[in-house]
Length: 134
Picture 1 (cartoon, helix red, strand yellow):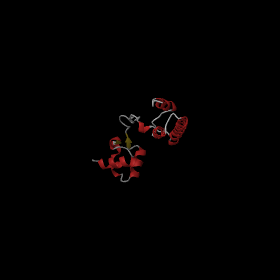
Picture 2 (cartoon, one colour):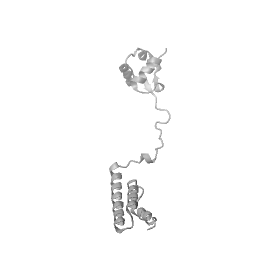
Picture 3 (tube, rainbow, N blue to C red):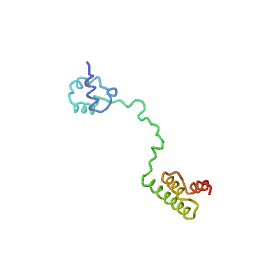
Picture 4 (cartoon, rainbow, N blue to C red):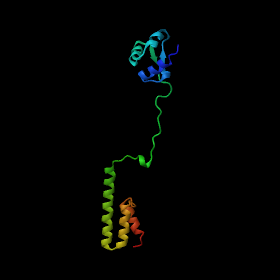
């Protein structure tokens, strides 16, 4: 007797794959008469329908991507770092301008570079200013 449709119904009712479902040969008549999902569930509790174990690997570990876009820092933390560095560098540029080591145009260019995060630190800015030739 063909119980393919019953197997599909059992797979849906028990939420497993069709290949994992096994019917007991001694109770095939009861399984054939089962119409609803509840009938299938009851037969499974009684032991007329059995479920095989999972074959093969249960979990495939995927490699985690570690790129620049995957860095998860809080925006607030990045902003704080940016603000403190920017303020420090602008203050230093203002001092240099006041002393007379930088003219108006150079200061403006450096401020643009600070805004674009060209300088990583105050030491980097000092090195850059030292290379300007003054």
